[in-house]
Image 1 (cartoon, rainbow, N blue to C red):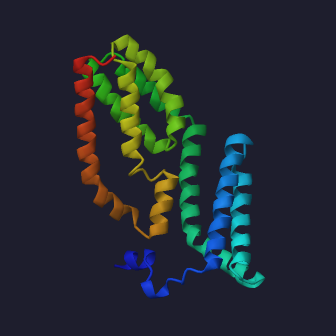
Image 2: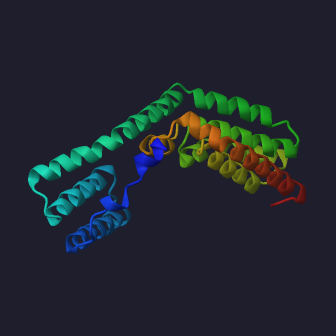
Image 3: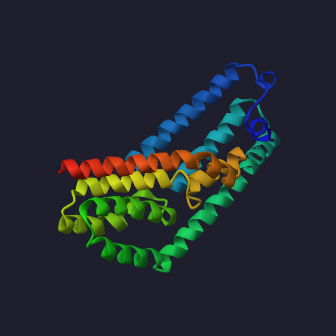
Length: 230
């Protein structure tokens, strides 16, 4: 109930839609268009994107008829809701940096790869799923995990006789499932913090579904190996 109150608004508190709101929506749409163009064509990144969002906020306040003080107060009030999410994201990133700079991830990957090399095909592809899911706890970035694991596991799959497509599928399954529950995911922890949902409560809620989906993924990988996906 408390979480519901945290994210819901009473219908009586919804402001009437006026031409000022239309102006604000136009400013927002223009800002998003400019950001997309800048990212795709001009190579913009975090600094430029942050500039666009600040400009949208300031111009929206002006178009909405707010004075300078009210705009500043509204900005601070809005930022307060994101402080806990920002801290959660920073802590999650810190764990990843420690694991990478301490070569913890490389050690785990090298050991796991050597162990998987001599296993039967069906066992190999399913243990690859477990390996990718486990490493996704340390590397919430899907592209980062792919760059570390696929170059190692793909040659191993050729030696064992497992399709590279199945290895990539196992990677996708593992990353997709783990990112729903990993505490090192800045997106997940930030969203839970913003929604005022304790991580332990989320884990209890989603875990039965994750287990069911994990078993289903193992079944699909086994079938793929048996029918000989190339």
